[in-house]
Structure formats: structure tokens, C-alpha cells
Image 1 (cartoon, rainbow, N blue to C red):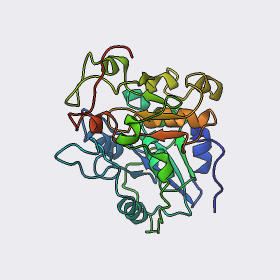
Image 2 (cartoon, rainbow, N blue to C red):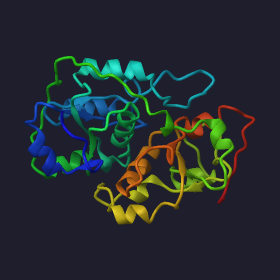
Image 3 (spheres, rainbow, N blue to C red):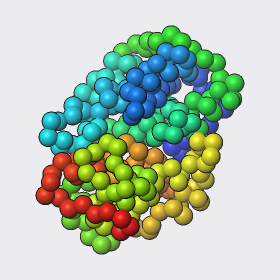
Image 4 (tube, helix red, strand yellow):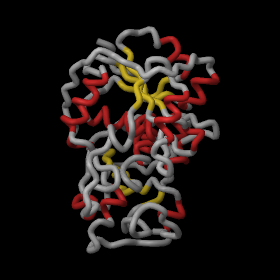
Length: 285
């Protein structure tokens, strides 16, 4: 069995060297909130040979509830996600590399898939640093056929301590920092393109996930990431629990892996505002 990697990232050159490994599985998670079909179309137009496509809405999220509880991208049922992974040919024995396209301005989907797999107890997973553009720049071959791998068995071991509930977020002690990973205008409540209320959870500080990336879409160094975050325990959220994963990956680069001290409020803002009784703050907190 492939050992767990020492870093959550893999370079394009390292991926090229690993493509012949029969224990490797590659997931293409390209997507755009404004155009849900764009990721699948991008995959059909060209992808890493052998890569499987994972759709944020249909494969990596649970069913959206009419009352909004759980948010716009609810966590999938662990057993359902595990069955999907096994049907795609991803088992507990496989090494997984996930990529998206940060040049689209939404390079957080791979980090979300990385977090989801880790939440299911799979530690042998890495994100392609720089995503699809980095792979092309490294001279990677382009495939256009849907990948097919023999079915496998994925047995989940859910890491319950990685999550914070809405109730826990509402009662966080002062020793825990609540970090909002959205862009500053959404945090301040100046605009809200997706959810029914604008603003942020009272007491949260803004830490835009894009601050962890270099201009070319690669992640900043471990030292730079460490300087972005407050000391002590943190809980992160965003709009629907997806882009906050990029900050969780940045924390892991800085040596603070997901766990009880670095939790995700998975439902995030879209879940928070599903209950009109919950308070909302605007402006700078």
C-alpha cells in the first residue's frame, strides 16, 4: 500500500512521474458555480489521461434540502460517497491526486475533494499544485476518453472531530478563532450573489481563501501560510463549505492538519442563514 504523503500537495512534475503507477487514481474536479456544466465539458475537452471526473453537485455533495439546512452543498452521506468512490475504482489501497483549474478563479474544488477524502479517513490524497494549467505547462499528455477502472472497495472511517456544527459555532469560546473564507465584500455584506442574506457570522474574522495562492494559482509556502492564520484552534467556513477547504489545505501546509483544532463548519453561511433566528453581522467585525 502506498504510504501517506508528507505534504498535501504534489507538483506537476511529480504527477507525471507517477502516472504509470497502477495504484494511482486521479480525480478531475473542475467546476464553476456560475456554470455547473463547465467542469464536465472541460473534462470532455481534455484531461489527465486516466483521470475520473467528480462533479461537485452530483458526486461530492449530498441532497440539498428545501429549508436550506445543511447549506447549498451539504456533506454527502459517507456511505454513499464511499460507494461512488468504489464504483469509480478508488479503494482504500489507492493513492489519489485531485486537480482543478485555479486560472478560472475558483481553484478550491480540488482542496474540497482532498478534505472530503480525508474526512472519510483516506490519508493518501494530494492536490495538484497549480492544477490543470500547471500540468499542461509541464508537458503533460491530454486525454479525451472517459476513464474506466475496475471497481474497488472503499470503506470509510469518518473523522467526526473535523467538523463543527452550527450550534458549536454559535457557542465558540473566545479561545477559538472563527474564520470566514469568502471575499471581503461578501463578508462585509456589501454583496451576496448566492445566499438569501448578506453579511457574516458575528465574531468571525475575514480570511479570503485566495490569500493562500500565488498569482500562478500555486499555493504559497508553508512559512507564508503560517503567517496568515491566528494561533490556537480555528473553525473555518465560507458560503457552502467548499472554498474554506483551500484555507484548510493552507493550514495543513503550515503543519496544522485537519482535526479538532482546525475544524470546518461544513454548512457554512448558507446553512447559518437557513435559520432566521441566527444573528447576522455586517461591515468589519
